[in-house]
Length: 261
Figure 1 (cartoon, rainbow, N blue to C red):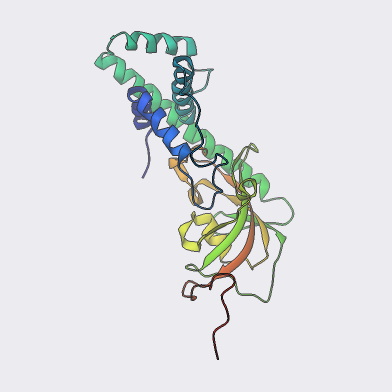
Figure 2 (tube, rainbow, N blue to C red):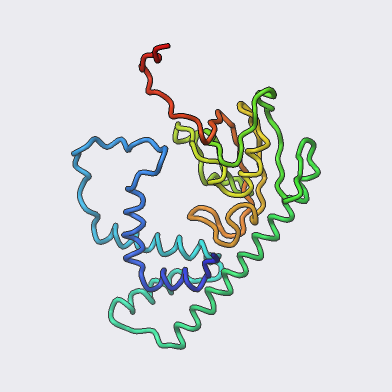
């Protein structure tokens, strides 16, 4: 489902404090396959933020959300945003016309970003397809085999469970996710990830190392993600560590004695 720029801005403008609280809560919730925080259980989390600190955090979250919809310092004045927030905190209410103008502006910024990122993805894929070793499939996915893996082993099926190490980047080189940085590979069913990965994984062999160039329509499309702008082309380095059949019996814990014959 497409998340419109209007909706994003409505949340950002009307619920900045709640958004900041939600963001802080999400940051404290451990994600699957990630190591636990270094803070010992029962340790003092430290003093609560000062009014100056929490004010900055609210502004940071607000600015980050505006940036995610395509707004940059070049087309908005931060000092005027601060003045508007100050007036709102003192009780001034926006008129219906004010709100319509903001919605229209947010929509135009969002649509411009969608078009800009889509064009950048097409341009990248066009140039990338001419590089030696890059293979393009009928769907638009491109990949390059860095290491073939075990040619005698079976490739994973759509419902099999795979364990991979990976690194994901945008076309400008910004890294948005990496199992390497966490020090823990990820395990998931093949059909539980984006379409570009699903297509690539069933062609890979255990031990393979591929580079994937995933067009927006095979990634997150116009929805985007927290660190992935809408309509972004994604570049992944993927190592397929192991494959387990979906109907395989559960593995015995380490140290379990072998069954009697």
